Length: 64
Image (tube, rainbow, N blue to C red; front, side, top):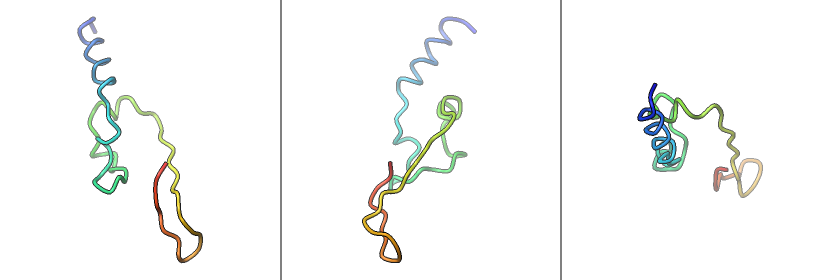
């Protein structure tokens, strides 16, 4: 490993965009579809659904 490698890695991390791991409906893609930089950098993600109601009428209106 040399300084150029470290600098490139830092650039890759700086350019990470969460949109790269979301589909068009803003749902997380399966991890096997993630790019290498995401595989190497992320150790965990916590997600929560936001809904407008509970029970049978419940509709997801967002993810956090």
